[in-house]
Image 1: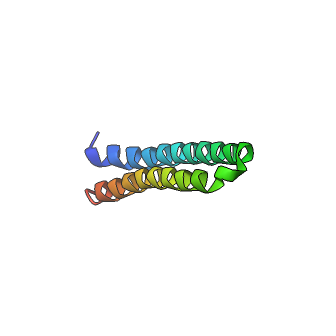
Image 2: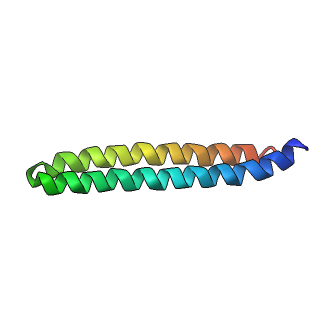
Length: 76
């Protein structure tokens, strides 16, 4: 099997796995933040800031995977 065939199979599968993992992580983060806000509404601002920071890190990892996939697609 040529490396191009392996890349053409592995890259879309890898991006799909990254997208699913990112969606699950973001769902968990937002769910936990909404639950914490419901328990302590006076701390909503601090919770929102921490949630946004966590979401930014999760999205950054997803974007890194996408950029890596584009770089690897350039190998075709």
